[in-house]
Length: 282
Image 1 (tube, helix red, strand yellow):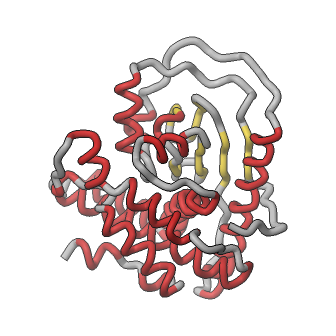
Image 2: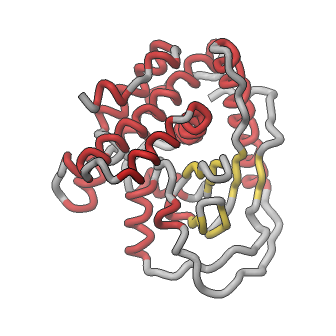
């Protein structure tokens, strides 16, 4: 991935600051949380009750590699802001940027206590993306994804896609469906899949439009994004975790669906082509 000169001021780096809490629960709990919430939407139902233990107060200096990671995240955040500002303006709307928060181990979010093993997530309550970069090692070792700079950019773009959903009212509508009690568990799972695949679609739109503006893509970048998308497909995760696939329990979409919708966003570059709900809920 080719770096640009753009940097965002909407990145908060909490690494090395201490604070937060040591979250209770064994490794098994953390692995389950990672599977359930990686690339997810609102994790408040689990996060709100997860904080416990003693406060952490240690502090440390960030090393050069960590500072480079911050600069990369600032760059990708800036490119998301510029691309979505342009797309919203073209459709008669105003884009409000999300905040990106880098942390390690645990931190507090508007959705409760965040912890590393949950992976990157978007919290609509404070309109922020939370990222512990160490999770990308798990993405490669546990889920078989090829991790590159652009695969990290894809994950960030997916989470920014959830922010776009919040700005457009999609997140609020899905929450209303959930609260209403009118939908079965199977129906809510399909709605969740539609929500996640639309975020993948928006990530593809971002890649297309940002590359047209800044020429960020290099050979292999799209393949790396697809590898990350396929790695966290529900079928792939279920095969690795339980040895069989139960399609009725999908909440994020299959590997094939995630690839399909990311590529549709990338090929069209048109936000209006991403109505996953009509297609998946017929």
